[in-house]
Image (cartoon, rainbow, N blue to C red; front, side):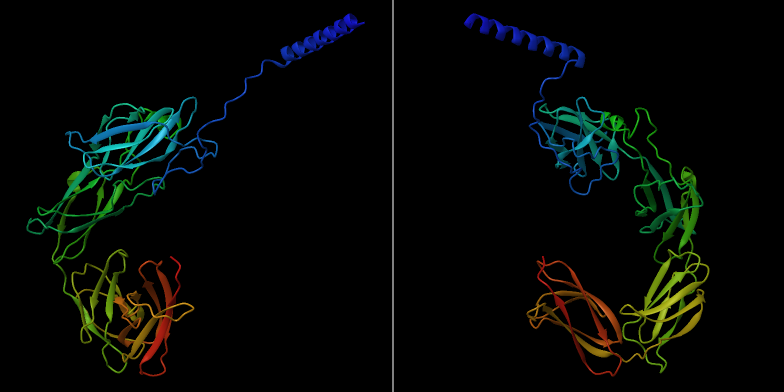
Length: 436
């Protein structure tokens, strides 16, 4: 009996094994169990303010670093590049896209040196610099000796500024604006929109240029090896130049026509001048006159009104629209005025203002805040005393928005409305809370 029971059990085990083997052959082989990843999974892309263009942002991408990479950046003359920053990206083994590495935004040292986290795969170094780009793709390996990486300067367009007699004009402000090109995909051709002429009248703009395509960019589809490094830019530009003692000058140029980048400044036209008073002929205490060119909205001039008189010099051709403001309140406006004209502007409110005191207090306790800085309306960098107040005279009726800065607290805003009932002293308050 015992032998029969053992034999029956063996037969049952053999039958179950045959069934399991048959099922495994039909279903195909199954992979072994995965090892749980030791690295953490995060969704953050890049530290600080560095954007990550064209990289994967899936929550299941491992961005944690492993190992350390070391490098040193020099220019083509071998001099260290001590400004700018490096952003490290990882092209992990077996993946088709790159990701920025956690903690991989690193600043350059005085000798151009840097170090940062590596990864299991290819580490690509991206340079953020206003005038330099990598000469070649920068690829690093973790836990190796520091490598020297070479950066090259962006190409520059050079121009000059002179007066009508060929003398160089130093300190001229130069702006670049879009010309007649209407290509919606075109981009500004330079890394900055303005510059200043040097002591010999020369100025330059660095041209926008794409860095060479590295393995991380290629895998993520941001670039292809051998791509042109220039980018589609405006076909034409408007150069604008202004300098003390000259009228504003503008000139439309081609991006690639460097011979046309010579600007000649003309002497100023006669000033546009006049008076600003209220209906009773009284002058305003802190009025300013703003003049905006009617056909060149970017061109704005301003002049203070002194004893009711103003003079706007260095105007260009064409008409200007005038506005009179005091403490941010518009008093008068008038259009269609040209250089050499004399105009009388009359404000729409009486020039007699009133003395105003504003107290800065803590919300809820009314405790005065000493040392607060108040800006806006009649105040410009006014600081409260021990009583927590600031004061101004000749303040016109109206609503004023005031900004208040208190050490250790966030900047805050408040409004005060000065009534127009009489010219007596007026006291108001602005409350601040203790939120950091």
